[in-house]
Amino acid sequence: MPFFNLDKIREAASQQYIRYKGLKVPKDIRNLGYTLKEVSACIISLTSADFQKTIEYPDQTAHDVYIKNIIREEQTDKIYIKLRLLEDGEIQIVEIGSFHL
Image (cartoon, rainbow, N blue to C red; front, side, top):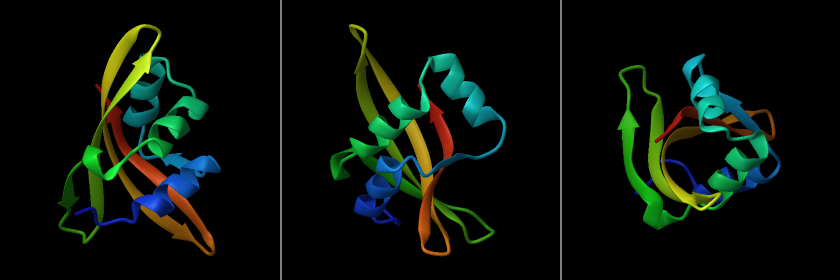
């Protein structure tokens, strides 16, 4: 069972409230040729069936891991997505910790 509410994740992604963690994530996304709009669409399309596991870290943070098949230009990308939901006041933001094949 996911740690974070998937409906809230999809809602934040639909408004493109997305943050990339670190330097590797934006590089991986660029290397795949994905735009912010495509990353948002990928997150919006997540279902409970795509959920794999929750990773809990020693600093008490957690990330949910999803694997999603995305069809792009006659090929299918099997994307590994590690994310969490952050709150900034009343705004919820999806923080992506991994996004790669």
